[in-house]
Image 1 (cartoon, rainbow, N blue to C red):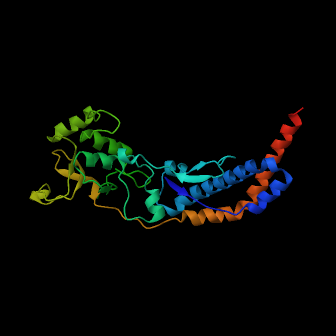
Image 2 (image 1 turned 30 degrees about the vertical axis):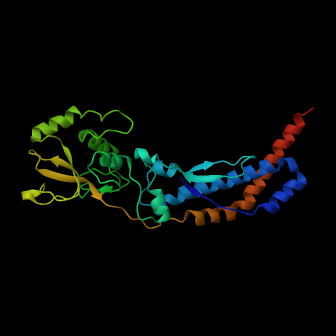
Amino acid sequence: MLKINITADISGALRLVNEELPKALPYVQASLLTGLAKRVQERVKAELPKSFDRPTPFTVRSVFVKSASKTAPVAEVYFPDSEENRGQAKREYIRPGALGTSSRRQKRTEYLLSKTGFLPMGWVTTPGTSAEKHGYMDAYGNVKPRIYAQIVNVLQIKRADTARARSISAASQKRAQRMGVEAEFFAVAPGRNKLGRAGSWLPPGVYKRTGPKGDKLHQVLKFVSRAAYTSRIDLEALARDEVRQNLQTEFDTAFSNVKARFAARDARTP
């Protein structure tokens, strides 16, 4: 889990609460911290499209807040982690881009390719040389989910959450039969091979056969040993700025709201 951790000195403000309404102190503190965290959340969501190349709406929405409480006066802004052992790192690319790491964890399809021996463990994939030209990528610069699903099914890669891979579609089987090949997609592991034209070396990756005889190859995924990242967004600096700008406003709001609740409660008490 990638968290944004910011500390702020609110002791002066809380002394004011303690003097005026001591019982409200933990509630004001929790409300203040949660309000600030929500401001940071919205700021991060607004900055992601500026810092990253076409992040998907799903990724932008995946900035979460854990609210503070009177017994746990800590609020968190975070990107949830994936289940690494199942290869489901849907949001993983935020962490490398935010921290500037030399690698990233494998995504689900990469993990499954590694489990079946096509992709060396720890290696990752990038869009292949034919991915954009032949329409295998979406508007956000990612290989389309349906293409990943076809790769998983045609290569008969076992899914992490099922007993076996889904069966190959009848349409895909017919296309392969028309081309006289075993399957539309095939994977090439790193190392020596003579799978290219006239027995030449074919770069590692996942390919799709096309053409009447299946002799045209489109590289959909490229296998690479690692993907290095430079830091694109300073999350903590952004959060500190947001807290600094809005600390007084959020305190005023929190104190006012809590006082109103206490007043309403007292009014109902006989």
